[in-house]
Image (tube, rainbow, N blue to C red):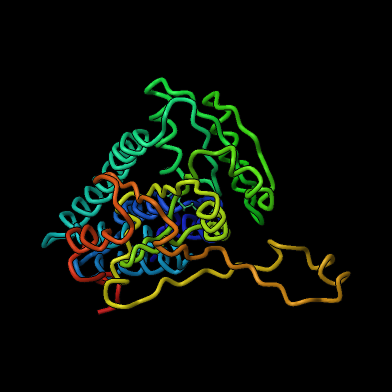
Length: 314
Ligand code: RUB
């Protein structure tokens, strides 16, 4: 039986109460630990079966952020032992290790990203990324003054979360609608975004609108920096798989009543897009910063030749 925490976490991820690739990964690892603690399995096989079922329930919530399957993979690989007690303890420990690593990676990445930001720089952000904000936080800790132009990020307006966080840190923020980005790029020294997945060729999958911003920034000569811990590297893309782009409910774009008023046009709501590597200057990870084209070397080192599926039914 699935633990209530697993059902709650899966619903929260699907409804975007829990959102952003790193936060989703953390919640999924913690949900597997909750499943391990709650399990009343009598036999090791039954325990493993339950954990795999919980992982599948969590994985099927949102398809684009690879941090989610990477987190599940990490925890399930740590599940080890010949008794239910050993399996439980090792699963909980793996989940705790995962969360600790995630925090450490974000701190290390922040310190590296902060080196790219000079005192007095202005950044432009899109969506809300904890990895990207870790770079700003580290720059502020270094005593640098940073200002921000924050894109609203339709349709879910995650830019508001970014603005609120930056204001809490005392950063001067100018919030603009997405369509105003190009006008303000001349005032910005960097575009700073996060990622949901990085493909083997260095393509960056992130919130819808990132690629349009990157094209405009290239044209303006504004460097584009992607802050993405290695948890965002998508191992399946080494074997030719593409990253699935989530299509969300159209009511996030406009209500049924508004849609009816417009004569019921078709509406599409892709949540993410793909920015090609030639539009990205640097991918900043906890292992250093990389030109996008070289990220595959790190991917191979960390993930071997591709992703495994430890959650599959045996
Ligand atoms: C969030 C988004 C973020 C990345 C990185 O999309 O695109 O830029 O997930 O975030 P959504 P982080 O709001 O649809 O989940 O750096 O926190 O992992």
